[in-house]
Length: 404
Image: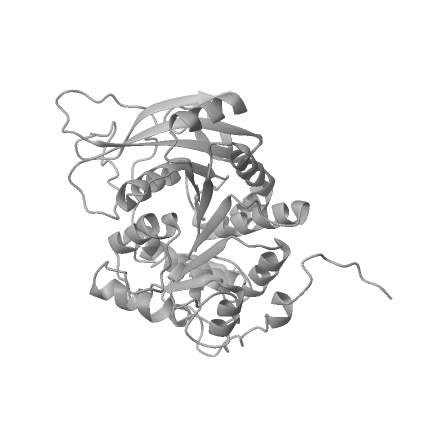
């Protein structure tokens, strides 16, 4: 019951939503201005809805499904935004609109699709976060791919989220349910000789799923597949100590890790309360100790977006909603460039943020309670002290049984 006021705060911060059921394809006619098209391969552990307007619901399926989807993006729009239709069917001239849906029945069909849409051997795998419908994740990935200008073949992995603020625990268990399926999807991609490298971009609760899948792969093989070169965690909703354990247990060498953090992330502040007042990785200040030295030791780059302003009232989706940051992902991170040199030219404001905190400020650390908690939490409650993760980072990646 303690979490009910927390959800009430979130509800007051969220918008009223958008029309549901946008997955039915619409035709592009000659009267529609020229639009941009984003084609993606969608893998899911969601259960089919039986309705072409939604395709999949938030329940769990033991069988994964593959779908080829194309999304049309209107010509006049602000970068970082998704133009949801105000009414159905969508108008491609002004709205994001699905223009093609084809269900793929076999792994071979999925491989054939990927090879037909190959972009110099680069693959991007996007894993969405908490409180997402199937269509939410499809449109968000289309927006990211379009606005970033990335040169990669987009693959969406969407897991069973009930898309309700009160379903946090269900969603978290759904990520655990889906970790083997994501691991298998990554293995299939890596086994394709036409694939040169894979970048994983995960958001919010989806970062937990990504880390667990990579950890499983590392435990099985001793290390993550070398084709998985970059892992980008945006607003990671992960207990910091658990992240340290996952990082160690995936073995070495590691992919290159980049995390986007923001101390004003209200969604992560609520998550911290729900999970026992344990700070989340995405809410740390990476320029402060003990975070800075531990992150640097682990070789992870942290980018602090606290000063970046977007239209997101929860400050939880800045990585996608800031035009400069989404371009940073597509133009630098996706091409393996560093973020610590003097060549960042995305504007004075963002350069100051990146340049001030992205100096190999690498990884893990304590549990400093984020400032947004003060608007929700009772003032009498004490802040959690930073957790010691040094021993975890230096631990043997192979778990040892207890002995007398």
